[in-house]
Length: 154
Image (cartoon, rainbow, N blue to C red; front, side, top):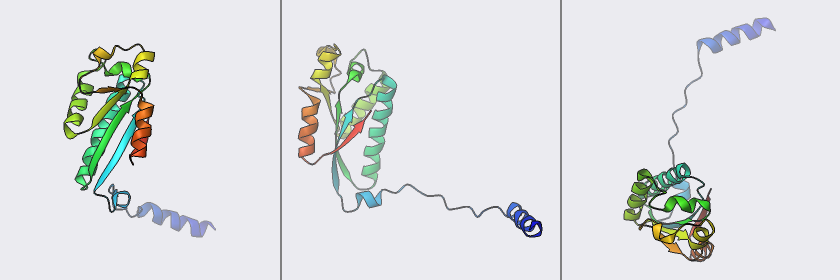
């Protein structure tokens, strides 16, 4: 048995596996036949770091769809304790710049008044690019009934 295994092992060591061609990301199957998409992101970012990460992800998602010929219609709906990071004093420059850039592209932002009340955030301190709505759950219901895909972001 050793007579058979040793030569095979030696050949395997001498000739490494044939490298596979690098696979490139491809969304064509999911986007086939679409010209535009509607999505609402249900965001409950627990801290500023998660907020920035998610804003970067939304921007990358927007750009990726546009690059593939899709016109996105995006709504970002904030709820939960992370609403305290949506104020002038709670948001850092990086997050604010991302919000402004996304807003310029047409992304709409909504912030839950219920969460603002529960977490004692003064609505007057909300950054101006964000719109306070009575209840984000109502918004999510409305957008889903209008055909928006709903994606939960925690």
